Length: 111
Length: 210
Image 1 (cartoon, each protein chain N blue to C red):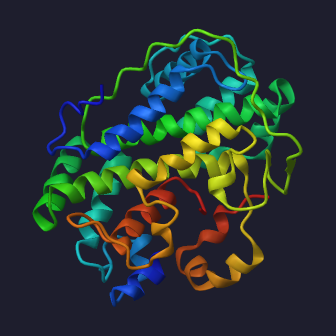
Image 2 (cartoon, chains in turn blue, cyan; image 1 turned 180 degrees about the vertical axis):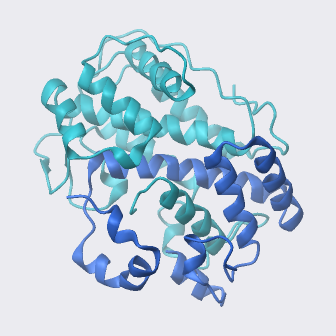
Image 3 (cartoon, each protein chain N blue to C red; image 1 turned 180 degrees about the horizontal axis):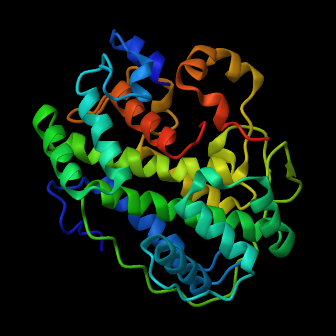
């Protein structure tokens, strides 16, 4: 999970940045990574090229491959989740309550 | 295969191998579909996304509707769209279609992230469907039958499919073992907090709670 991994690295994560990338994430290179995902989803070639360059300059070439692979993985996982309709357990809902409220995720839950 | 033509950076071998395994799986007969049907389905959903006129595979319309919606707009998939396909074609074929579309989205997503040309679809392998389907699984407040547990088990109605799905996690994200460490990181590469930032934003765009 994002919050526990940020804690493990002592990063001052602001979870609201997931919803609004203009908010500093508190994670090194976080803004560059969010812009990368946004450019990919928007299918904006110039923005994507800029975002790729920013990741290479901020991190390294390997990190761009990691970011693309993680994006692909969650393109897959999100589809398996929606296709299978796997429910979120009450325990997980309670554990993630702050994040759910901050990001307005309750609207994504389906009956 | 998997040259990632157009990528601004070299791609690590384990990711190429993982995508290669998915491609080999796609080309082969699955539990309910032939290799030809599987590759045709992949071509169909790619065309649906690109706006091209797709060739319609010989599968029920409800199955094709689910496949196209899941590939192009996963957040709009709900119980009714999945059960419509399952009622027409059965749970095993529906799970097979969900798996194919999802794994294709992974490979295409990775290529798009590297501005690489999409990998041409593989040549289908001849042969009849394997018929390998787990017995005794039920819907557990889910759209499809699956074991109790989390997303990695979601495709286990089809054991050979579930294995390919689970084996792809490590090179793309983290292995099951690595997921146990909040301070996991690749060196060189991203650490877990940075990885989770990418996954969280991607899921939000896909309107997916997961």
